[in-house]
Amino acid sequence: MLDTLARDQIREWKKDPIQFFHEALGIPKEYIWHKMHELAEAVRDNRKVVVKAGHGVSKSFSIARLALWYLYTHYPSTIITTAPTHTQVEQILWREIRDAINNASFKMPGKLTTTKLELEDKWFAFGFSTKPDQGQENATKMQGFHNEHIMIIFDEACGIIKPIWEAKEGLMTNRKAKFVAIGNPTSSTGDFIDCFSDPTYKKITISVFDTPNYQHKREMIPGLSGREFVESIRAKYGAGSNQWKCRILGEIPDISANALLSKAWVESAEKAERIEEFNFVKRFVTWDVADGGADLHVIKGWWNTTELEEVVIREKTIEEAEPHVWRLLRRIKGNSIIIDADGIGRVAVGYAELTADSKTAIIPFYGSDRNTPDENMYVNMRAYGHWKMRELFEGRLLSLLPNNETQKEELLSLELDENRRGLIAMLPKKVLRKKLSRSPNYSDAIMMMAGMIDEVEPIVKSENASDIYTIKTGLPNNSKRFMAC
Image 1 (tube, rainbow, N blue to C red):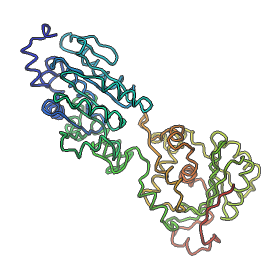
Image 2 (tube, rainbow, N blue to C red; image 1 turned 180 degrees about the horizontal axis):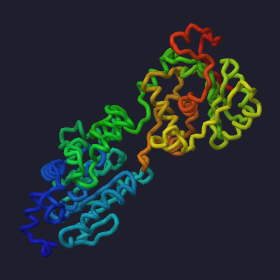
Image 3 (tube, helix red, strand yellow; image 1 turned 30 degrees about the vertical axis):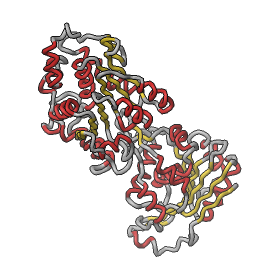
Image 4 (spheres, rainbow, N blue to C red; image 1 turned 180 degrees about the vertical axis):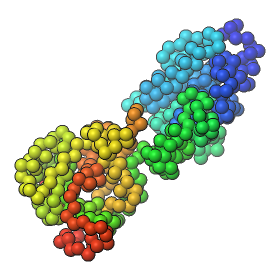
């Protein structure tokens, strides 16, 4: 290696990683922007660096090339990179490493594979994922790496599990070791977030507003985020939202950026009186159908967006649960039943349609249906219903029966999922079931109300909203929850 690259040149590059980027890796100077300079100098001059960044600000591009700078200018050295998933390791950070080697100004020494670059026996870079089910195994593997020079890189650091954070401390006892944690701050808590209050770290924030593409209002550097991305996030989530904070500003959100709801919103809905901000009265029932086993039938009665009553039925068939739906509808003097129609719910829709009279509408909710009110916004009706529910919570337009801790847990477990088409999507239901150890029956019953309330015919309607509340509705004075065994 040292015969291939002159020792004097290596000493120069060791002092100046940006010079290495340009001369060794062939990156045009105009593509090396000021935040890349800041990050490179921080890694060169500090043992521990933590970086929170927006989306598309070249964080993986930069850290991959800094890994190569350290490897080729420090002998002997070991680079350990990790990320939450194998895809993130192989297809993001290590793809950047492979691209950097393949596009270098000259043939860079070393044997390169998908996630390893080896120069000599104790001179290499290696990448692995930190899957939760392999956490202890990977932590042990990580602690086995020792060398004169070590650099540890946590990419997408917000998602890296605690055993890996603890394992890296054993390597940091080496005074020459460096640690870099970089990622999008999608959570408000955790080991990555804690680094920003630790005085031993050099801290960097990279916003989309920092990029040359945003500042010059055109694509100065291919692939960097710019004004189009900023406007798409503004339109979808709103400026000031948690998605805006983490994706655009690179700032720590108030709650997890992927969380659908905040705890404050849910608690406010549990304390709210009847919501009286509509120019209509709609009374109806939502039925989240049990899918066998210990799954629950959750049946809720509504006065607009105010929950009036709830009936929960355990270990009963659809035929056994259906009479409870009709009894609740009669108690609240409603005219519509919204039913979860995916899967076994189709059977429930069929039964309800057979027994419905001409005054009662049976409204099926197909969560998997991709035909949404805005196909450029939502991946399916499940995503649409959850987003409409979010808007009700955020706008303080939802009143729920209090003291339902199971429901509260379900609501606070709901997460948005990244969608490759840029649409709003929810974390798959099977993932949520695994997270909760049950199906989210309570939250689904609320979500269906939010997604389908526009399909319910009003019982009373007026041009003047204040007129509505002088009309006697014949509703019970108190809200109730029933558990049918």
